[in-house]
Image (tube, rainbow over all chains, first blue to last red):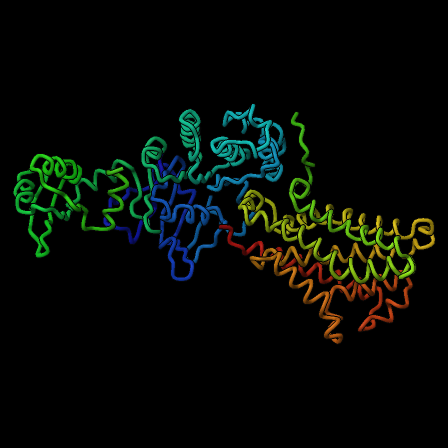
Length: 327
Length: 253
């Protein structure tokens, strides 16, 4: 079970991704961009997903939802193309027989019961036995009892689960999920994570967006990291982290005692060089960024040195790093 | 077996009707539709101002319901049918299905008609019964004409306002401006342009069907029953086609 990246042109200096490992890509984004006037929401994103679970990771406002909506055909890309199961999505109603979306927004018809909502989706999918499909989908998310009640009285977690049931009612081959674990309690969360993993293991292509790294770590081996609308990293989660670790990093530090701190830092095995800048800041080069970041506060504490600022100089790396290492 | 209020062949229509019946709009629409009954009751206090026929056909239908009350009432429902789903972002639950956009638009359109026709025309019938009381049977032809003209007007405005809700962000406000500026005031201040309003054709349908010479002679532009019905039919079809086209091209945030 893995997602495979077809290509990743124009990517930031982050790991290279290997070839597809589990068959042809079922979801392809080809140089996809979306902009609103001067604001670029998604910039030249290219990837392919094979069956399995892939995490779409990025901070709030990074363009995850916009990307998912384009993959779902709800938004037209400003540039580039999207294909799901080798079909265009936008304006192609038939593709939805095989594609499901769990949208981010909470609002679901409050006057319907959970069962009616799922059945509405089954009817719109023109399933031969909508009642059986409804019962199966509701059982999948463990909502048999609450499904009798109106959605207006549901908690956020229950709404999320009934949305998942509605998206699964037609047993889609491709499932897009926008922050599906939001609002769920730990038990619901564990249940849904297990459900998503099972879907992936059963050959479904599942793309799950989240801004919470540990969630994605539990869900998916493969990730897409999107930051400021750009695909910052893609591929195996651990491979990306390892490559970031292996990459030489330049870290800038502002402190009240630059000389003393420089002397302490140069003694660290992870430090390759330290130089004093004209503005009084230090720039340290390290080949083991995680060890370096762990050591700096300890040194400062031991030496009673004040640290005012510490940040990587490579902005793209900063973003990926902060998501894959610091969180 | 699941008991459900969804009629299997028409889930979007059923959903739309339930949306309306569970919302505030239907209460406002019902109150507006009963307004003629209030005026009818007031008329009973001083019947010398007009004959029952003149009051119900001219004062109530041609001057109140057709140009103002009916468009505003339909506006509230029609702009909510898809507009509310866009606003609360539930529309993807319908559009992300193997269902054509035309079917979605037609189902929403049918939902508007299912709710608006009985409420608006029911209010008209009630007002008619209050005003005519003992001579209700004598004026049946007028009632039939008003119901026919009213039904055609509801169909046309439902299609137009459904389209407006997909094109203009503040559709309710735009619809109110359209109703008062175009349908109600245009003919009064610019009689030559009156024939481009829906109200003109509704007046023509009513006048011809009721054999009401006052209404026919009052038309700014001579219009036969057939051409009035065909014109409003074409307007409705074009509006629904444009709404379908618009829904296909819409970005759903």
